[in-house]
Length: 170
Image (cartoon, rainbow, N blue to C red; front, side, top):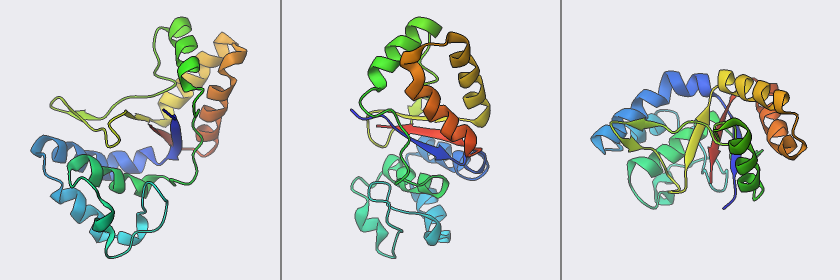
């Protein structure tokens, strides 16, 4: 399992997509997400290959559910080709962070859920960190001064430098 992370326009996501995505999770209907993508198709891309979506983009969606359409809708807020994640090192880093801090929030983030339905397009986890979350996580890591956590600190620093949030997936 590879930890992938992307600098992510968290504020734009909060304003535009989060309410639509939560509503779609509750209704279990992707229609609002499809409409969201179609309104400005040029701003979205294939979350797997990074190619800009074309008119026939729905052929790329394997499972026609909220999670898969949501995965495509998220690409408005990040570049799938710009992975800054922890790769296969993530599990070892998570263990150290949990031992030191009692939580793995800095490695992952928070899930997005509505009425008990959790957004998870890859079925292996999908997490979000706001700019404030990133600042808090960096401050915690600085206090630890643990060399094994350097890759995590670098990931968070890249997101902070981009002045964005973070999207983590597997």
